[in-house]
Image (cartoon, rainbow, N blue to C red; front, side, top):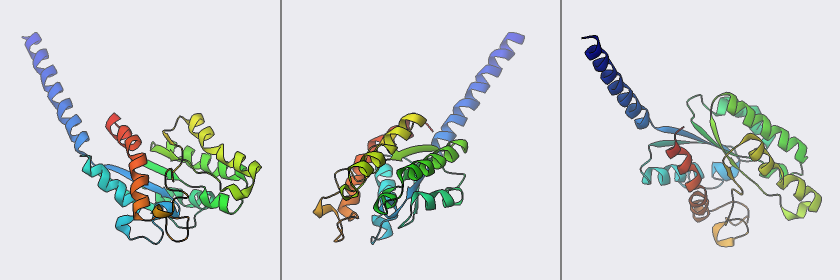
Length: 211
C-alpha cells in the first residue's frame, strides 16, 4: 500500500513539474536594448528602430518576446551607467548592451569607458540579468593608439565576464552609404535590418538555451 502511494505521489509530482515547465516556457522573454542612438533609432520611426525590428524578427521565428527600447541618443557609457538601474526593469531577462560609440567620438579615455562598461556588466549580473555584449570600434581619425586601446575593451570584457559577444554592432553597415542616413553614421531602416539579421542567431541561441 505504501509503495503504491509512493508511486502515485511521484507521478503527481512529475505532472506538476511538467505543467510548471510548460508555464515557464510560455512566459514571454523580456529583452532590453540598452544603448545610444544606434539602439534608439535616430531619425527613424519607432517601428524601424533596432528593438522593434529585433522583436519582429524573433516573433517571426516563433519566440514569445517583448523587446524594450532603452536607447538614448547621445548617451555615453557614463550616461548609461547613471541611468542603468531605472532604465532596465527587474522583469528583464536579457539586455543587449550597446554603448561606447559616443565615448570614442568625444575622445573619452578608454580606461573610463572600460570602467563604466564593466560597472554596468557587474550590476546586471548581480541582478541576475543575462547580457549580450555588443562591441564597438573607434573611428580611424582618433589615431592608432586610441583606436587600439578602445577596440580592445570589448573582447577583453566579454572574455573576462564570460559574455555572449557580438563583435561589432554595425557589422556590415558602417561605411556603407546605402545602409546609412545622410549623416553617414546612423543606420537607415535597411541598415537596421542588416544589424538585426547579424545579431539574431546569437540572441536566438540564448533564448532557446533557456534563460
